[in-house]
Image (cartoon, rainbow, N blue to C red; front, top):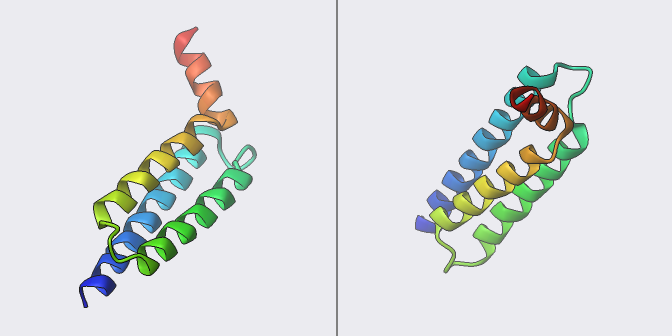
Length: 91
């Protein structure tokens, strides 16, 4: 039961972080410049993280959530809308 609850919590965190990424990118650039490739990579990465959590008992839920949060941040930093927003802030 503990393994199932940990997997559900990790999956919920993956869904929430992915939705936050999608909303932030849509708000930053709109539908015309939405980074679909990065969103797809984020979804695949989340599926891999959740499956690893399910497979290995010794992985903590906080480790999976933290690793995916850092992965989401990395994906968000290297998208065109974020780079353009940083350029606008700096100049």
